[in-house]
Length: 152
Image 1 (cartoon, rainbow, N blue to C red):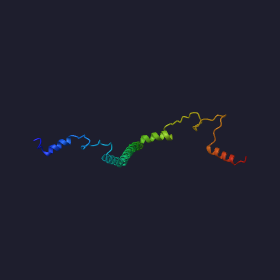
Image 2 (cartoon, one colour):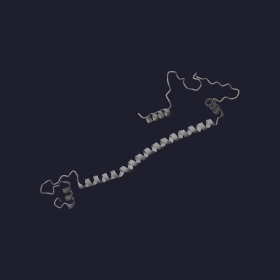
Image 3 (tube, helix red, strand yellow):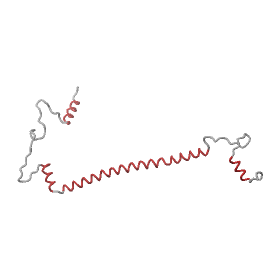
């Protein structure tokens, strides 16, 4: 049956082997860049370029969401602090304590004392006789305007 072998098996056998003879159907080596590879590279580049902007926008939006969440946490903390302060301001003992501390309020029948530090009661340090205080900024400005107006 070797001579009368089926045509299909003969083709399969010749397909698997390579004919390297110069006259027979020898193939050339595959070039480094075929047209199919070039088209594939162009398609990959087009896909990469079309995805670059949406990915960048996605990352930017995620960062913005994180910043907004942080701002929300800060705002919630401020709201909680204000709610606590509102509750404290509703308490009579807190109001009395603050009036005494800030306004030097004394209830009738209670002796209150204010201790001074020896500076005369105005809260400023006493000036030494030898040193001169720096004049206010507007006085310095007016002196410079007068000095610029005088002829040389």
